[in-house]
Image 1 (cartoon, helix red, strand yellow):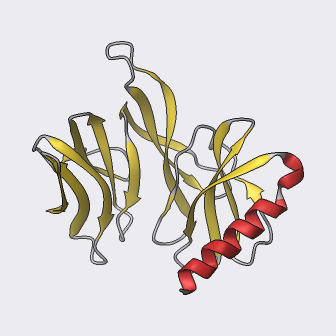
Image 2 (cartoon, one colour; image 1 turned 135 degrees about the horizontal axis):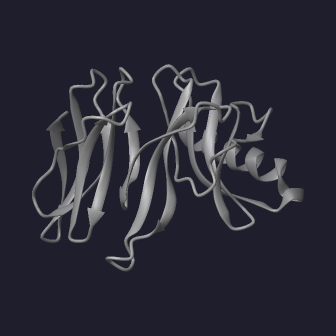
Length: 193
């Protein structure tokens, strides 16, 4: 119940703070690890971006350098964000967007593109900050990958045909859980990093 009240309060605060600027709050709020800040998705003039604010709804700001951004995830220390941003369509396969995995400080500084590829989505930082899990691919094969936070050492973790997405790290960072849809079945998956 507490989470539901928090989300209602979030939408009321976020929606009212920027009404004059014609900003649409899309959602996907993520609280920082210390609970003091919230990052969330908005649309400004039809372009997806990220905003951040204090947990009490004050000090709202547009996060610079997040045009075309997907929902973000916080690093464990609460200083950095990871998200994917749209780049362009893949001309070799219509409908396959090329997306970048981007890390940066919450103030927009130290923005770094660590990887790009077909339909990169849903990045999630490991608890120790050394790796980022994400999903990539095209139907009917969406795989979970793990990449070092500096962009090196890309590892494909799932190999069966199917839709594998929504990876989340275990608290110790040794295991990922994710949704796996294969042959019209939805299952929870598990793999090690």
